[in-house]
Length: 334
Image 1: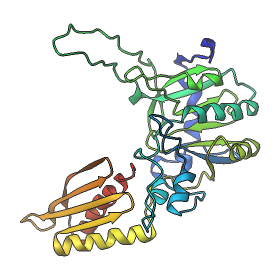
Image 2 (image 1 turned 180 degrees about the horizontal axis):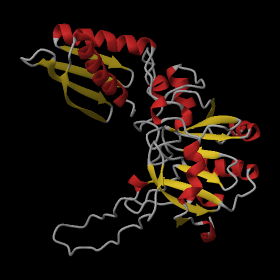
Image 3 (image 1 turned 60 degrees about the horizontal axis):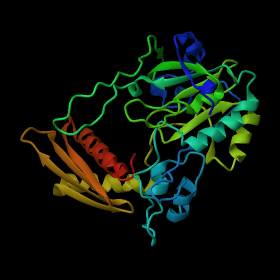
Image 4 (image 1 turned 180 degrees about the vertical axis):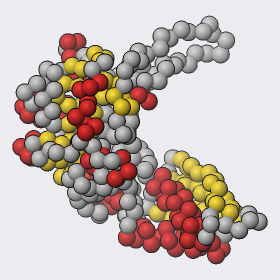
């Protein structure tokens, strides 16, 4: 990338007003609350499960799908392919916890730039939003007793783009500059969370908590992205839900675990990605207690306790189910 492609910080926050006007309410849970409505078509770019580093290969969702036997479909979620009902006879093909959230794999971003360029009249005039949480202070570790090292704080935006979901710093530059950002605190490469051209012909959205990126644009652009073999894509709709939804056998498993917890005080679940144990410690006050979960998978574990304060038995079941739900999905990084 030429130095002339580097992005510059901008105060022209009104350039994002059109996005705010075309977003669905935040609590709608729809794709159009993340990427603007009104485009002809939409696509979802699935982030790789494992990046090619440390001798390990690139792993895509399709690789995990072949292992688990769970087919990809337009509304596929990561936990569906990573947590099959029946544990496969072979080892899983990935070693990381799961797809990176909030950023594109750089080769994917470069492929996306190739595809986006012919579909805008202003490729040299684009806007890029970076979540304000990424503008953290720089840090370095030095040996104990060493003289202090002064590291200048990274530049902070003087004005922010304020959208229902997040606040962002704004950058301007050519479309090719979408891969020019580097985090001062970690030196990690970071793609913007929102990017669009001045002619507003398309919009790219990588919400920080999502293991995929949405693109809205013309039908020709979306067809091109769906056929680009460099990317892993599924068709999307602005009316699709974007939340993590647990259905079918996994929902039934959680319901049975809740009943075990309430009747026996504990539950133990064995899944393809690891195990989850749950302990329930009721307090003397009715409707109160502590739910403790532990999720163990190859290479690590996590867990903790959460208080339960319920007004009736149904609310208590719901609160316990939420904690079990979170513990199960944490096995695969959701």
